[in-house]
Length: 484
Image 1 (cartoon, rainbow, N blue to C red):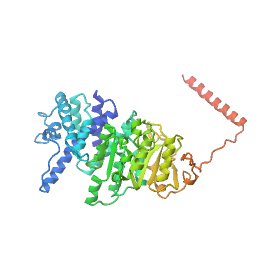
Image 2: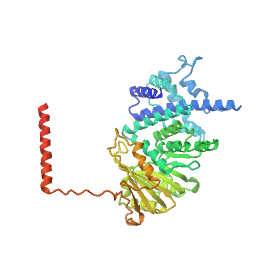
Image 3: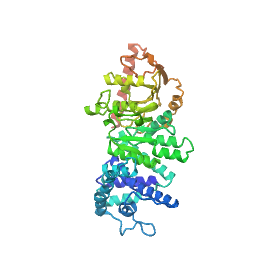
Image 4: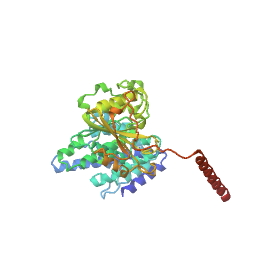
């Protein structure tokens, strides 16, 4: 049912002049979905308070509630067309009254963890892009059919929302930076295995895929009591995100996965000076896919002991610093990090090996990140124990990976199975850190089990093969000419 609703909503966006891409579609879906969720959330809280003989003070003032401006109802529960805004009147209200009012929460509320503050953040950063008030009315009517009251409903909505994020990533441009293949995220979470009672952090949160999967993993790990449920809701998952759209998508994604008030802060993580990090700021688990290829300004680089303009290398320093002693991290990074000869790369590899136990490196096949063409690896490490041996696994899925053949959970099943026991096979091997070149700290993926194939053919045989291929090509060309 909900899948058809989402499709119909996208059809409306496609026809509206203000929305031109998948990025616009998910941005506009997000703020409208958020307000519908908020109305259901407040209804649920108010009902629970009444049953307990208590009172609940709603966050949103009456005239700005969903049931007042978006979907006022008649006595039989249908849309009241007599008072429902549409056309220019609806655009005027949304753009000049609703958004400014909700954005004002950011100034009036001090606690960044509260739902109120999140409302202010979201509506300070976004704007309504729909140019037709009739299109907006159409979308609102469709979103009103979506319910957020049961776990089943939230599960279906979260799945559909993930699909929209995936489509945004596949659409190209900068959409891909928000989307990490969920099969890869799930596998990283399984290997790191966060436990209830631990804190989980992503300083480059994007669409919050890592935090969502960690929540699912931890919430299903056992039968939760009330205290454990509240701990997962309020004091377990933390994130930071620089970009406005990613921030909103991340919050909405976590809400749909069941976290009511996500602890995601809208800030530039790299603007924080590492020298100011204290023990209270650190986390047990870090899961992330930081942006790579970006270039940071010199004033940002001053916040880090190892100076570099490469965004991913600054994030890696940040993650090492933000881990508690004994804390674990799974982070995606370009494979060139393992071999680059510049001073920053060498210094960072040295720090990683000396301050942490880099216990695993997963080498991913080309095409794992659709639309980027970037070859990546996943680093798994534990802080506070010096590296002795690194277990490498070279993922071989037996096919080309791409948009039509994306990485799936089955591709990673063997890796997850072998990772905990550090099993050795044709695609897995151990490297003793004592064998490393201490001048370069080179960690390049070199599979010792793969012998280089030597072509033993004579020059005469090679020439004969070339002539045979040339003859076949000429015959094919002749056949093509005959067809036309």
